[in-house]
Image 1 (cartoon, rainbow, N blue to C red):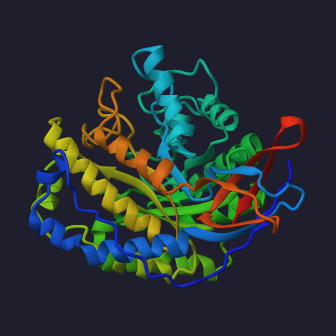
Image 2: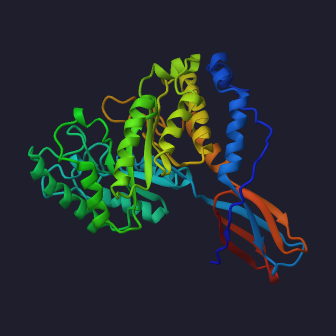
Image 3: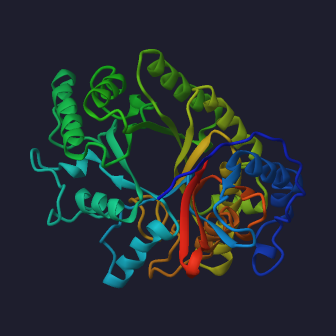
Length: 441
């Protein structure tokens, strides 16, 4: 395989705004006029311009060995942007056919997967971690080795979530001692064990999950966030990406600023944080109804305020957990879910400092206790909902570049395409198919 690295040329663009108002089917009626005044043509045009500016690059392919007049097909194979989903139901659906359809989502729609490494369920019995096939069944917590193997086989970016979660309810095993100093031994040993077992096979980790509201989460080692990163930096290969994860966009600026302070403090003390995770959960079935009516919830301006605040950390942002609950299982409710999702994904994808988006619960009924049942891309029978089609259209069609062109006398092909991995295909002498793969960066 020959690789051509194509550089980014920064330009300004004035684009005609696309028509993002719904014009057919239920979408015409599910969202109020007040909602579309918030997500108006000016907002949509601004998003379009930023997608063009921030997600594409100018490419020049040097193919002088190809005779003039040769037909060349250029197709994007992969995104550089991460589109992910948690993979907490791996192997846990009712039938082999449903499990296969679930697995196919990773590769066909998603290029990244968040794997459940919650310590509380990973090592519920001290010294007997649930790594391998044959481990005891826990809903939404499949043994992790088969999932890592699956991601490697499919070429999916695996992310471990999370090494340390400062919550007695979700994070620490029941056998963890209460003494803060005694806990440190177990924390370091756990991090070292994960690093030895997985090395760089798990490419990315949420090293610490939700450290801000520690006052309400129970006893933890003093300065545990700093110490956890120090141990992660010590034991994991330097190629492994180390993230932090906290804050829901709903939280607003005061809580976001506290998160920012923690991140900047850690960085100033020599901690390597590669990405700052930001969550967005619509857990209530009432909230999407209120959004559809035009209440000023998750408006573009409020979202931009939170994003700009986190920009001050000087690190890329990843939208690490996304839940958009449908109000109900009716066609009307499902359409509300899909419209909200489409606008949020477009805004996030357009924002220069965001490098990935992760949908949280892929199947209805696959959420944690107390979270909504209607937040999946599939219903409980693994039938695709409208929101799946929305994401498929964006990720695999609107945001992918493919075209066919005829080689001219210059021996070059110039185009502007979405950043990612590409393949050029043409027929050479005696009709033999020739290919070249390259990256647009």
